Image (cartoon, rainbow, N blue to C red; front, side, top):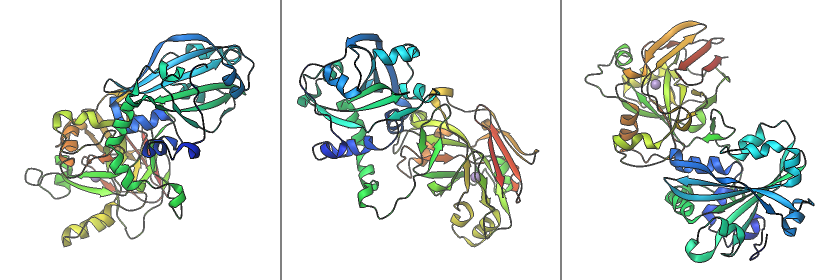
Length: 421
Ligand code: MN
């Protein structure tokens, strides 16, 4: 490409000059789409700008991509948050790559990464490179953003599909910095680079339906006594005792289909099927009327409970942690994003053990609806992207034993399957 040069470098070479929190955040493995969506939740939009257009392939790019092609096709897309552009992305498809993969012309509005992962050909990605784009750089001009200071940060990646190159260049517009800055304080509190950690701690994640991206779990909140019939079966009066909140550790999540070892120190392990709300946008003091804007998606969860320890805690005025927050106590299905299936306020919620019905109710029976739960919880905690909220279980809870097969569902969501071993 012509115009003012950009010096593309590894992250280590630019980190000292770059807005640190932005680049460290974007340098993590994984897709930009998933990172921006996790930050901005359902407010994020993805849109193709115009059609594929032909352009000459500069000698610098020919050299970088190791091709002889004189021409390429450009595909421009943008990410928006609440209408404001946060990322401009350009895909460069050399002519020889298009000759080999003509379907790349038909991508439409779908993210490139998702299309590439469905191809049955070897796909490799070369290390990410970063650069500060001068205002005159063609990529900065294509992003059509003056960026007050005249400089824009960008990164690029070369994918090799069956050996043929595809270049993805992403320009981070100033609005992304502002959206990210809103979460910066929190991230600075909790993010350390791998260099300063004595050992690695895995980050718990949950699958997202229809996507290879995963939902990073920040915290797990749970609601107790949110269906009247269940409150009564537990000996409470739902007209006198309102729903209550408790928590589980983030790494209590168990993937759909995985086995759960029968936990120690109990002889009365109970199942509790629950609608799980996944938070995509944080906030405090969220009004009920705005609560759904903070929801990323929904899943089916099982709030496994050591009931004997919970009864003992209740009888003795002790905390519920050991009864609720034990290892592997939160099996959960993949999260269905709101963008794929909308919100849930009704629908059957059910659970079977070894094929026998145990719980069968409807989400309409929730004492506190999803918006009310989100709003109430946000008066006690600052909600963050990555929070999960188990919204309470209907009547019919009961014991499970080693060897039992638990199958649970909610209309429109994946079926959750768990075996106790
Ligand atoms: Mn529960």
